[in-house]
Amino acid sequence: MIRLQKFLADSGICSRRKAEEHILAGDVLVNNKIVTELGLKVDEKRDKVYFKNKPVKIEQKKVYIMLNKPEGCVTTSKEQFDRKTVFDYINIKERVVPVGRLDYDTSGLLILTNDGDLTYKLTHPKHSIKKVYIAKVYGIPNKEKLERFKNGLIIDDYKTAPASIQILEKDNKYSTLRITITEGKNRQVRKMCDAIGHKVISLKRIEIDKISIGNLKIGEYRYLTNEEISYLKKICEKIIK
Image (cartoon, rainbow, N blue to C red; front, side, top):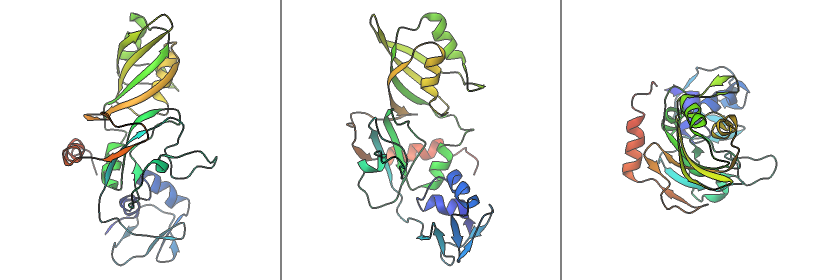
């Protein structure tokens, strides 16, 4: 017996937290009855679960892929404005969900999987996982601005956690920065750069902890290696279930 939200996550429908939202919204039926309360446990073999009137089964084969997300696509399965989604760039039979998100105009490393436990733990707000970005910005941050960035900034009424920032290249108008954060707030890197007066021109995520985009081309994907999968599971071991 497992909780309904975990069942939905393990089936590749969505993340566990998103599943909770769908349950509360009445999108899930168990044995032909709408469930709107959290906490219900289901039997994987005996109970019949439907999501938006479509039957749901847990994927037996766990898959883990890495996509080099292009700019100009959204990290969702459905798009109301008919824009491209990350799922237009992958061709696998299993249903997977993104581990976290990248903004429409941000490119780079995105992990997708049907492993609900891994998704839940990697995106848990209490777990600090390093994410590395390359940002091209207007202007060149001075020492005082770099220190402010490193120590945390007030954006959207909260203070960001300490971060890392390094100038890789610079000229008269622009600079290229290597930025490392441990949070995943909405458009956080862009807002942090705005807060020190250097608007982002382009942004690419290149690493999640020790998992690197490497030489994977934009718009292409690959399966994670066994070593990469084992590493991700290892760093999640201390996360509470």
